[in-house]
Amino acid sequence: MITLALSKGRIYDDSLPLLAAAGIEVRDDPERTRKLILATNRPDLRVVLVRATDVPTYVQHGGADLGVAGLDVLLEHGAEAGNAGGSTGLYRPLDLGIARCRLSVATREDFDYASAVRQGSRIRVATKYTQAARAHFAAKGVHVDLIKLYGSMELAPLTGLADAIVDLVSTGGTLKANRLVEVERIMDVSARLVVNAAALKVKREPLRALIDAFEAAVANGAGTP
Ligand code: PRT
Ligand code: MG
Image (cartoon, rainbow, N blue to C red; front, side):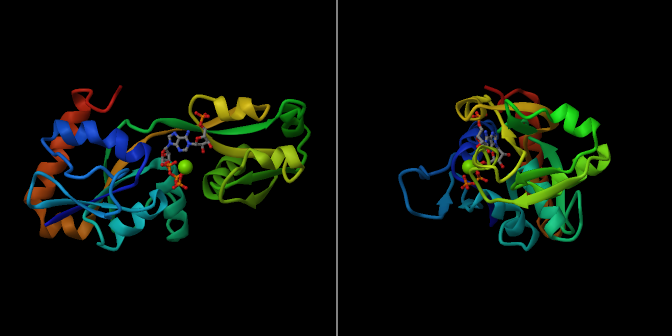
């Protein structure tokens, strides 16, 4: 049996066309069932639904053989695992090009980020992405006090909790609705296929075939809308 870890929402939705292109159909709709293990048209393949941030944990520890996770999630997970940039036991073979967004710095419209940076001021930055943020500001030589949040980062500059946030942006609608402006793009983000390294040895043939099928689907543009 091969177990594929996905998270509900955009990762699942964007993965479906890639799965279809690889000849895989999921038997249940995650929005309509409370099941966490979903069968597919392949008797040897099942999908497990986990939180987006738990996908690398499942794959790393063998709760799933492979999974789909955003680069943002992988970078933060790697840092927590004490291994910035990548995690032991996690093989990252493929950029799926789905769930695309960017990690950016945003501030209130009336905060002069450029001059704060130029003057070498200490900037208070609220974010869920502390690892990526720390690396970014360290590389720029900008002094920051990082404030870890778990959600609704947009609120931080509006309440005076922070001068800036580091958050994911796709349409920019959320920033705009909260009168924030994107002042710096840190990196482009997309979802990656991750595979348990030990499983890749034990279940080599079927996992290789699956990775190849995903690769072909990506190359044929199945993941791009
Ligand atoms: O929502 P939950 O707490 O369960 O978990 P999650 O937020 O980790 O999962 P989910 O499904 O929201 O995101 C899964 C992955 O999708 C992320 O890890 C990213 O790699 C990717 N992704 C792509 C995004 C976005 N686009 C995105 N726009 N993840 C989050 N957002 C959020 C962003 O944080 C901000 O609040 O959407 C808002 C901005 O969107 P715009 O369109 O208004 O700019
Ligand atoms: Mg979310």
